[in-house]
Image (cartoon, rainbow, N blue to C red; front, side, top):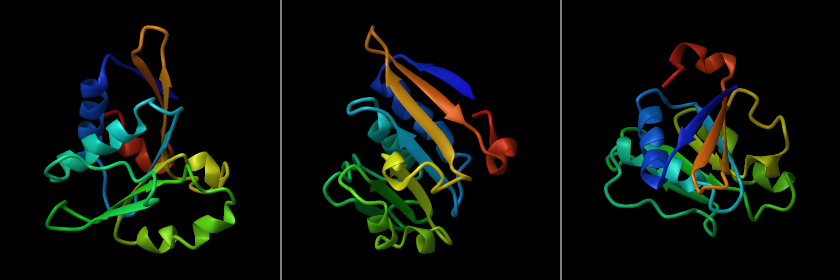
Length: 149
């Protein structure tokens, strides 16, 4: 596990932008943390660095927000599982099929269960007492050659 200190929302988005240089279709990045911890900020940084103009909305109500070329370099699904009550509902989203040609950015992955994406780059954000963020990174074997950022 690696821990990174993020001083403000801009640093959180900048970290996401660094990740964009290392992602490829088929990857899964999971984003854990409480409400307001910065999960969507990391995703916005990735999406902006992949070419998205403007701010990416949080997919809280849509659950899955797709992005396709030419607005981004390759297909990306920004997923928010917060409103999922039963892990069986995730199957209906066809996320495993999308992995063949898309990057999955998954907020609230714990709703799917602990081993749903065992090969995912796992990002866990916490809010520190001073308002900054700590980011703990779990790096799976598939990411070892691409880490650190």
